[in-house]
Image 1 (cartoon, one colour):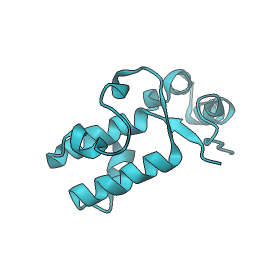
Image 2 (image 1 turned 120 degrees about the horizontal axis):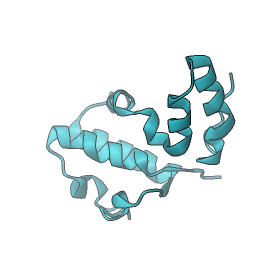
Image 3 (image 1 turned 90 degrees about the horizontal axis):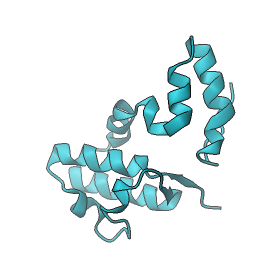
Image 4 (image 1 turned 180 degrees about the vertical axis):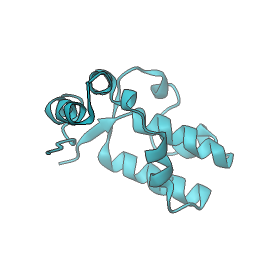
Length: 114
């Protein structure tokens, strides 16, 4: 099974590698993903394709801690309506419960459990 993840991760990855003067075209070269796809509001990428892009990005920028840079850029709004719902919760516990309950509607690979 090769789950699909929101294309938002690719958008963030493209933005991050630009900090090292790597263009989106350079990163996406050979991946089958186009810059036009990045403009779509909701699109998905197979986990294996995302993983290969991560590896390619690490090779291009020579930064093994790339996942940390990605994590720093993630915002709740990256998760669409589920993230927005979590943002308006009264406290962290409610936000986590909201994410736990609904994040799977965006992506089968996300199955958080408190």
